[in-house]
Image (cartoon, rainbow, N blue to C red):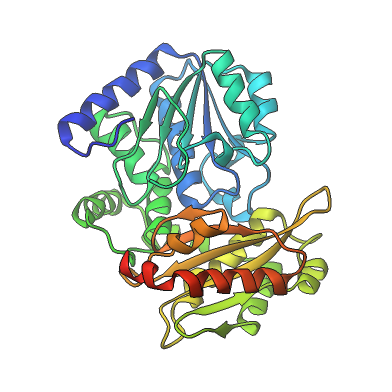
Length: 361
């Protein structure tokens, strides 16, 4: 596992990555399911720059499941394969898999991560993973590269452009900027390596990419998504020091279940979290809770915490609720028969662990 952040170590790892790519002929690039801008941007960038460097290699990009409509505006979005990851592995039989923005197979397949893991091991498929998370279980890869950058897009830019000088391609800078904007919340999160991040962004802008246009790529919403955002605003409430909201089961059944894909639903919820959850005075952090129906009829409640920098460590709560993430942004899952019960579980976890969450911020 490589986590060093020195120039020399980074260059050596980049050269190892290039060596593996150069020897591979069938390459599969993965974004995690329900991809955020960073995962999707980094995967599409890897796909594009590898194909530009090695035009004779067969390269695919894949996301399990469906994606939000806004993803269709991105370069090479029409190349993205969808469906079941394990089936894709069986059909394509890659000799190299490059995973972006995740540390284990369960992040790339909702229900068959174990089968994907076993298939890769059984067939001795080479694996490279780019990531910037440090929580949860990490699978074994040939190269797991994590330098604590604010985004995976920044990491793949360092590897392929700064270190290896792979070629740019049409609109490639948009993909990198999209991920950086998304995972820094447009530079609002605390970033100990801000000078390096702003150097990349400055170079991208100097080459002619419009930061407002890139922001709009992820900010567009449909009218159906706007209904979700409005419902979350309507259900706004607050605790002693936090804000929260939720999607009711009735609203979900009438306005989400048959109208929105999972990723359109998730994207709408993220809009509320990023633009409203932390700014209702006087509180600077909070959570949302939203029902999710699976094909077998099972209902779970997916939630997310958001916080201003250095206020509270939200992973203290999310890890108690089968989740994880970053201190300022983390996700979780609650199994319950009703929203009311799920909401009570989350609030109980907050009350029981608030002190340690503030101490570790």
